[in-house]
Each structure stands twice: as structure tokens, then as C-alpha cells.
Length: 452
Image 1 (tube, rainbow, N blue to C red):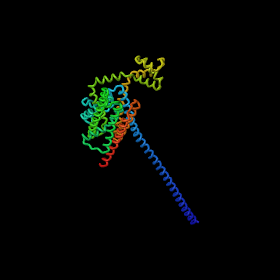
Image 2: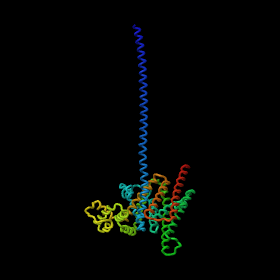
Image 3: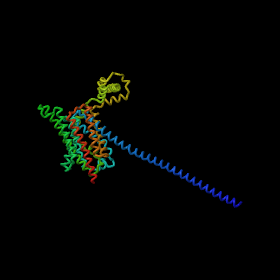
Image 4: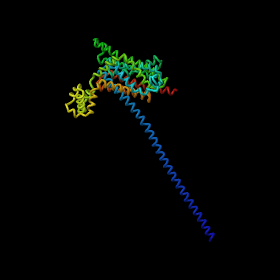
């Protein structure tokens, strides 16, 4: 019995052991299965987390990139096109105000860029200016080119050069750059570059000749008025041609500076090229003051707004109240109120309208357009330099050509400029040639990179 019980107990123990072992194996398998599930779940969670992190990083990387693109496009197309609009608005009434426009642009750009380079810790010995990367004497030479080119470009308007024609002719800059590069730097150019410049040349010449013929400026006309007009046009074209040649030399000199000191110094170039130009305007003070008086004698901004509101019947009631208020505060603007609407009670006019009316009636349209031109010029320059720093020269060439085309179309649409078919054909050759020049330049740079 004892043996039987012992055997039974042993068998029971073995069975229990087997059962415990089986149970343990089952628990272990279950535990391993749970671990696998947890590992799989953790891997999935980790995968989702990684994807989320990647998506977040991509979002952070993409948003600033698109913000930069949006900023550059806004500055170039908004700033440059608005600049051309304000320029033409001034030139229409005061074609000889080119030097004043240039001076205002240089003053505004100098003021906006000065805080970056002013350093009180440098002391009066360095004129409180931060240490320069490029020597001052180099900036003096660069500035001489820069200010001369800008003055010549704006001076051409005094010789009956229209803004659309001005845009087309200035787009022929690569022609002068190639000639200067070949003669001065002994550069050699590819057939593609030569073809593009040939197209530019044909386009510029065709546009100039077609514009002259369309305005009755043929050399076959023998009267004195026609002769004087032809002479004026020839002088205008000569001024723009000289400006293009000097601009090409400026580009050659700038390339040498950037090759020596690096290409990340565009802010320094922007500041010194404008601030060093200001003393050059001192001898022209009498001429500048005459142009300024001409702009200040123009009609007020308020009268312009009322005329637009009357013409298009937009917001007429609000403009009427502003005009009436301005006539109450400024008696010399009473005629504006009478042209807009009825005589309502001044007590019903709010103080905000009062202040706005006074401000609008006190700002001459010429001064408003001059300020707009100077500010948008700075925005345009910033946009171009930002684009140059973040993209290839091909992209810069294409974007600027598109911008010029948009400016040309806006000039024709907003100011009613009528261009002859020959001028439009010349513009087509100019813009296609400019695009081809950019493509060919990018192709040659890729070839050189591969060879290196």
C-alpha cells in the first residue's frame, strides 16, 4: 500500500510535473506571444512616431522654404512692378525729374541699410561704421560706376524715351556685357550665347527703329520740329547705350571683387554703393530743388482719390465726407469738396475722417509717387539680391525677364501706351534672347562642374 501510494504519489507528482511543465510552457508561449505583440505594437508605434517626426521636420523645413519663395516673389513682382508704375506716373508729368528720382532712391536705400553697418563702438575714427570685408577704395570705384549708370538710365526719360521702350532697351544688357567681356577680359563665348545676344541685338534695334517710325520720327522728314525730335530720340538712345556699356564694366569689376572677397557681401555692396553716392548730388542741388518744387506743386492725393472715385463710382459717399472735411480744415481745398458731393453738416463727420482728409489734402501726388518709387526700389533690390543668394543665375535671369514682361504689360494697360507691331516684335526677340542667354550660361556652368 505504501509502495502503491508512493508509486501513485510519484506518478501523480510526475503528472503534476508534466502538467506544471506544460502549463509553464503554455504560459511561456503566451508570454512570448504577448511580448511579440507588444514588440510589434511598439515597432508600429515607433514607426508611426518616426513618420510623425519626419512629417513634422518636413513641415518645419518646407514652410520657411515656401515663405522665402513667397517673400522673394512678392518683393520682385510686387516691389519692382510697383516701382515701374510709380516711375511712369512721375515721368508722365515731369520727364526731367530723373535725377531727383535717383536721389530719393539712394536716400531711402541708405537709410534702410545703415543700421546693419553702424557701430558706435568703432568710434569716430572709422566714422562709426562696422569693419568692412571689402576695402573702401574698392567701393569708391564700384560706386562711381553704379551712380553713373543709374543717373544715365533715369536721365534718358528727358529725351522722350517712353517707359515701355526703356524696359525693352535696358533688357539688351547682355549685348554690352558680351562685348566688354570679349574686348576687356578676352572671354570666349559659345555659339548659343552668341545666338542669344544676336537675338537681343536684333530685338533692341528693331524696337528702337519701330518706335521712332511710329511716332513720325523718320530721318526723311525735313522740317525742324521733326529734326529736333529725331535728335532728342538719338540722344536718348545714346544715353541708354552708354549706360549699358558702363553697367557691363561695373559687372566685370563686381565679379573681380566677389572672386577676391566672396559673394556673400551683397548687403555691404548695397549700403556703400548708395551711401557713397549721396555727396555726388550736392552740385546738382539747384536742379534737384527745382524738380522738387515741380512735384510739390502737383495736385493733392485727395483730389486724385476723388477723381478715381467719381470716375468709377466706388466709395463715393466716404470720399465725399473726407473731401468736405478737408475743405473745412483747409480752405484752399474747398474746390475739391464742391466737385465731389453735397454740403452736409460738418458735425456729422468723424474725427478720423477729419485727420484722413487733412493728410490726403496735404500730400501732393508727385511727392506720393516719388516716395512710393523710392520705397519699392529698395524692396525690388532686396528681392533680387535674395533671389541671387538662394538660386542660380539662370533662375535670376528668367524671373527678371518675366518681371520685365509683366512691367511692360502693366505699362501698356495702365497708362494706355500704344506700341507699334515692330516694337512688340522687338520685345519678343529681346525676351527670348534673354531667356536663351540664361539657359546657355547654366548649361556651360554644369559642363565646367563636371569637368572639374
